[in-house]
Length: 172
Image (cartoon, rainbow, N blue to C red; front, side):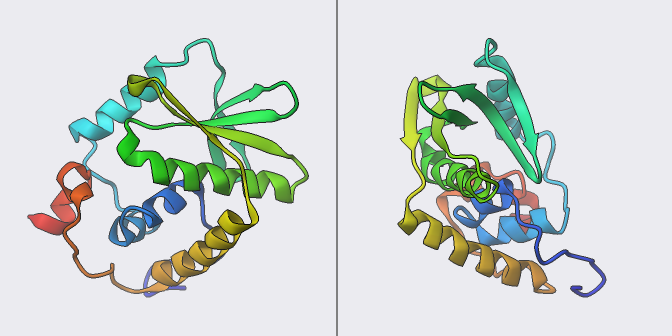
């Protein structure tokens, strides 16, 4: 338990993994269920892209704590997809998708992944490697430590701040 908040130590999800690789302060806000600015135009654009593209695909699969954007059958394996707005989110998409692949592997499902950036017509294949798995396990440990802190990490101006839906929490 952290201060007045009841945070489950085991609870880490793909969104927190993605935030970890962007901004640890944003991660803390999300983990503590602070609602970002719902009128943020970049947040709305993300929702639009997720809803408007890949209409022929089935979307929004829930597996445990994971919400996977797209699941489809490949030639040999199941392929899961993570939709991102732009290449700017490429690393976070790869790590988020790798987290899903790792969790699926733990329950006996071997899958491959694709980060999908429809506005740029990009499809980035993702496979879970031992190196990425190790990086994720370290990230999960650090995420749990960040979540347990009573206050968010210190402010740090980064390029993502300009479009962040939590901007008001940091820079107003």
